[in-house]
Length: 248
Image (cartoon, rainbow, N blue to C red):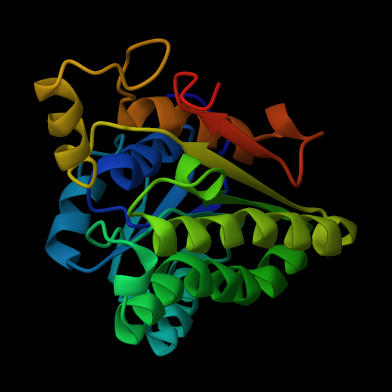
């Protein structure tokens, strides 16, 4: 455990498993009090129990597609943990692969609501609380699919491309408030979400990237920790690929 985030309050969405859980643990290990958001409170509490002794964890069940849930989430974080310094917009929804003309309006709306509207709205809600504490840091989790077209993942890629632009807009507009906003674009990481893609590649003996590696959730978590501490104080508006060279 180190003290890079000692006294800070962080909120991580999609924190019940995979990348989100790893990020929550990483920030807790750096000394932050961490609020975990996801659909199942019991699973979130299990992650919080893995925090170092003395580190506060707050589990809040919330549906990223419901703006009222997001308002309640930020309200509880501020009320119970005393403020908000770090926001990690990690929650996302990956629909079944299909070409864009087969996506119906309901599916399109849900993908955009979870992957793009929720990060925007949570950032908007977090802004005044970070401003009141003299600044803060936001990390948006996009995807390499938001940087190039993956066949069958059109609506997902569009939503993640929007996250990249959201990052740039917020970074530029909120720099005067000392709120840094950065984005990461992971490639294929060993999570439940990517399980079918990993199986497809492995059964065909296909390399996922030039390094021929699948990422671990902890690889992403360490980058997030860097982006929300003073180690990255000269960075804002950046989108960082962490993909084993997938897009080279």
